Image (cartoon, rainbow, N blue to C red; front, side, top):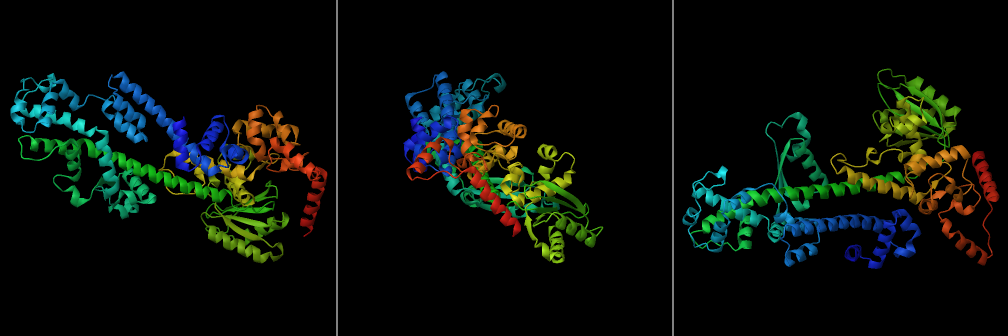
Length: 611
């Protein structure tokens, strides 16, 4: 464990004791938001970014240690674990190096090389490698027994030399140090090329036209182009290859064949076996090493591109969730449409649905005036202040309609905003929406979501699967488990950075609070519905299945406005309340009473309404 701690500390440029403290807290079940905010003194002020990176690397390194132990046990069971090999396995710093070292010992189906060894051809292979002055034909003749290959025999000289070639090719191709050198050479100098598959030049595949004759160095391909290449390959439109470029790939011998020859000490000195050994290197490159490394490096390119795409998703989602809320104002949400009409929903300042309608201002009905009259009636009746317009089909046309509404009702002082409607349809058809609006048409529910996401983007968007919010490209092409994990972490960080009013929050919002889950969030809402608003944070302990550990993790992020204790409205954790009180006593200040606070809020609210 100390090795992992030291490695992470070096990568993050922090002290090992900081990493060790954070790891201990994570292992105890603490969440990243909780550690970042309430355990700064323990971790030496590690922020949430450090902690997220630490958590990710900790998972990787622990998986690698488990794999290291498995590999050592497997090789030892085979009786092939030498002190040198053990040292190499224990010193491997990446999963890839581990797998390279394990490759010769990994249990596999019977290969051509294994069959050749069973035929007794290994001494021939080793003899020709050790002494190229030997005549391959003459040496191979010694191993011919005339039996068919299917029966484990060596029928002729060609079969003997082919078997020896297979043995050496496997030996060379499973040498960890050699694989590392060739892999590095291909990564630094490799060229990814793509071409269109025969018969796939049709109109349906036009979106891949930019990649019909494309090439770029593997190290410099931007993530969006890499993902486009792999999408085209998966669609059966593009053929994607990795090489060193047309000129180098045509060289004889190939540069990588030369690397293999130099590594194993093969030189062309016009000795009898030199040409045969050169053919072995060629066979090793083309049959063993090149296909293996091409697949591996293209996979590495795809994973790197996916990682960058997921980061873009995360950044975009963070910006969307923390967009400035309009606040408690009555909002009219419009989900634009053409043939099926525009769905309209009005919510009050608390987000409660109070009116709905469907209007048809566009083709084919073109009821512009009737639609204006309906919107005007709803705006006047419910004192609408903001109009939220979805940015989907017919958004621009609907924007013009609302502009006419604003001109017709100047006294209403309406403000219109176009908002992203991504995920609104997903929410509309969800189980949550069905429970919230069981008697409401699915299409109208989307308009409710569009209205509410203007009031409070964070509270509304947490009801939708982050992957359905549409904040990046190629979301269906990337690793879905990693995407979900990253986006869930972003949502968790955003929710806990803002805090949640426990007396008004929905179950989906509460489920994102540090320490809580779907079951606990539902229990909190059910307890609140049955017993009324929570008077203070301490009352949360009465919720079924919410124990002391969960309370410790969640309490600081849950707010109780208008409760018994003014500190319950702050981000101060209950465990620090005695410290706050001692400080106030020393400066001879007291906490403001809840009644004075409520009176002041009520006065401000009346003043706001009168304005």
